[in-house]
Length: 269
Ligand SMILES: NC(=O)C1=CN([C@@H]2O[C@H](COP(=O)(O)OP(=O)(O)OC[C@H]3O[C@@H](n4cnc5c(N)ncnc54)[C@H](OP(=O)(O)O)[C@@H]3O)[C@@H](O)[C@H]2O)[C@@H](O)CC1
Ligand SMILES: Nc1ncnc2c1ncn2[C@@H]1O[C@H](COP(=O)(O)OP(=O)(O)O)[C@@H](O)[C@H]1O
Image 1: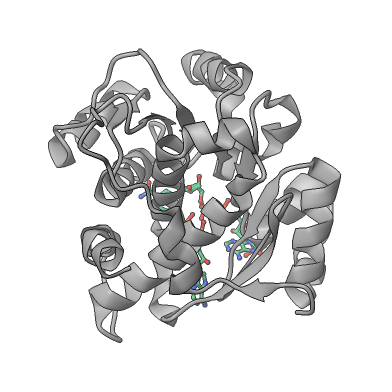
Image 2: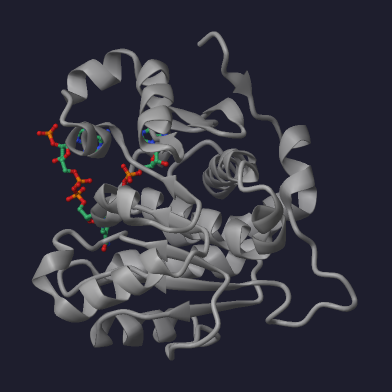
């Protein structure tokens, strides 16, 4: 644990971009989202819903038709056409990107855009191809696959592996678990979950959306100094944990319930 500072609500509050009276939907940040698949359309709905509850100028969702129509059913403010984007969230619910030529083309557009990126789930292995500054959000199994390591070894020393992965992949790494270890050029931080009820399918997809929104709303700060990605990643993990805890009040919650608790958590910060 040595070397990892605890990331607290006091540390996180400086990393929320509140729109100013001069802002509009474009200047406050547009997040492009390439997530979901025929098998996992729900991941797309969850991530978009999380991003919009975190506060962002616009979310552009670019994914399979059924997922796009489910996204619009849940969040009609999402835009489903191509256009200007300041940051990307890619990979949640996209297991084999090479199986789908449109998904693959979209993934490469994001990787080559030079914009900040969150690479989750099926996109984690593409970090070497990203031209922009990148945050990876693996669980132990995904990090094991990416590094060709053993998940049990990672589980035994996650803080060590998070740091090693961040150095060798030259990115910020968010290694998820009950304690989430965040390592990158901006420092090393840890966030212990406030509730173990977070251990449920789809909560990682929500974290991707929260983090994507923070990247899009800080695009200018990232352009000046991309090491701030590490602090933004720690802030996303903290918001995610606080929202789960608020949503369940000590008990279980749905992932959309976690998302719905985000505005209150942000207001309280
Ligand atoms: N509604 C939706 O659309 C949803 C869509 N989702 C999306 O589905 C996609 C696939 O997700 P997935 O859960 O099926 O497989 P994945 O997470 O790749 O795990 C593969 C294997 O890794 C291992 N493993 C080791 N450590 C682990 C750990 N800490 N946590 C978890 N696993 C760990 C473990 O193998 P074991 O160690 O048990 O042999 C496990 O079987 C993904 O893109 C996701 O975004 C989900 O979010 C759910 C809601
Ligand atoms: N035992 C636990 N206690 C608290 N949080 C947990 C626990 N297990 C997992 N989490 C959190 O739940 C989320 C699960 O994400 P992930 O494994 O990607 O699942 P999914 O792909 O189903 O969304 C992560 O944010 C992780 O930190």
